[in-house]
Length: 146
Image (tube, rainbow, N blue to C red; front, side, top):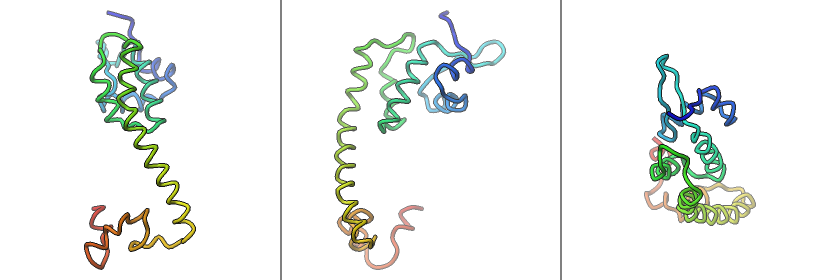
C-alpha cells in the first residue's frame, strides 16, 4: 500500500477545509479509504486532483463536469501530463462558449443599466426575446422558479 495521508494532512497541504474534502468525496471527485479506527485516508495523488478541482472551479467548470473528467483518469496513480491535457482539452469548448456568452452579456449589460427599466416585456437580459410575453399577461417568473 502506498503512503496514505490523513484528512488533516490533506487539508493542510491542499489549503482546503476538512468539510470541503468531505463535500468533494460525497460528490465523487475524490476517494478515501478507512483505517481500523474509521478515519479517512487518502492516496497522495488526491493533492493533484484537489489542485485541478480548485483551478477548474476558478475558471467556472461545474463540479459535475470535473467528476465526469476524473472518471476517465486512473484511480491508482497520478495521471500523466498527457492524461491531464486530454481532460482539460475537453473543457475548452465549454469554456469558449461560456466566454462568448459572458462577452455578449457584458455588451448587453451596459444597454440595460443605461435604460434602467428591467422591464419583463422589453429587457433583453431578464426576458430574452420576450419569451415570457408569449405566455400572455401576468407573472411568469414565480411559476418557473418553483
